[in-house]
Image (tube, rainbow, N blue to C red; front, side, top):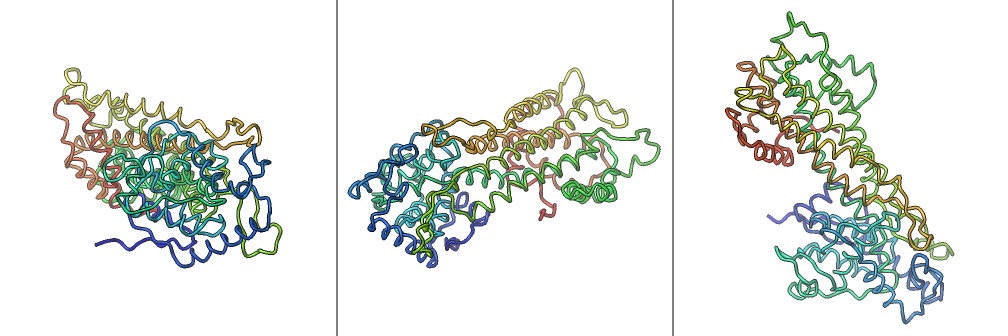
Length: 514
């Protein structure tokens, strides 16, 4: 059955709304309230133009050319030329889902009635989404301050019937895709080209999609931690709620609770409570709630920033039609600046680095078989020496973590000035967004490697059982990866488990954090 269209009514988008449109191709409709707001703002822009007012980006040049006044008969050319000249991106095309997320976020922003565009221009974005026409957008070119100019200009090219797009499974010239679907190119009017390209919609879209992926990776990381505790025959004493209540940090306390939940019913934990000479486990196990909890809290900082951005208007200048008699009813400002997203994304990169880093340390601790209390072989080899087991899986995890450490360097702390110095402090949040996407993928691979190793180590604990959640995850892994009885390439096994992590199959059974 066709899903109910998402109504863009001028309100705040939810993160799940963006994901539905971007990844599940939910249809979109422009609501009546949005139409009212858009028309009110557009009417004010047109009245100010008719009155001869000089307004940035409406009848002036852009950036350092803002002092150049444009005659009324050049206003259409001004907006079309802006889109064409700013479509200067390089690099591989963004995934279609990222572009679709950009489109719905852009449409929702314009629908809030602060941008001064026409209803038909917003409707044109909605039509492209619903007809499956996705502009081809190069991934690099935004400095994340005057909005995501280059990526959004490539998006806007499709609205005016230029550039290329994906339609069905093919890359097409946009003019042909519009013709096939019965759509017409938009003739941009005053202010519209600027409104289309002068926002944070790429940064916000990329962050939203990564957050959707990270939800499942974080759930999987909790289950992998629980599996590691039993695979390493560790104690569960460090999960005691009294410890975490005493620290008073909410993230670690929630993680400890969720790991306890995953281990509930384990007979492995109880099997070595008596006469165990070990006093404490290594940090990678004992401090896992503190590390993961801190990382999850940092990612929540990004989630909050994105939630706020999904209700905002980030182009420039903005129109306040309700103050029509006010000489400041059209205001220039800096809402396009990406720093409110760039800093949280840079923070999230650090957090992701730690989720993977502590997982790699648990893999290393297990595979070295340095704990005489755990009945496993070195590298989980069926016959150490003849078979190398999972030795090199840890190398791969280490390589991923090294790359994560490099990606964790914040992009937002570096500034390069643009537009002849008028745009002199940029966020480079688009770089943060691209790096965060890479980091999330690497983290997922490391968690998959941890699951591979810990699932194998659980076999050495039999006939004892772990908790129900852990055993469910173990059975899911065994449905795609068999036990290691002789050396084989671990790469297909790791890829199969990474796919399970991405699909959310290895966080099953955990209560979703709120």
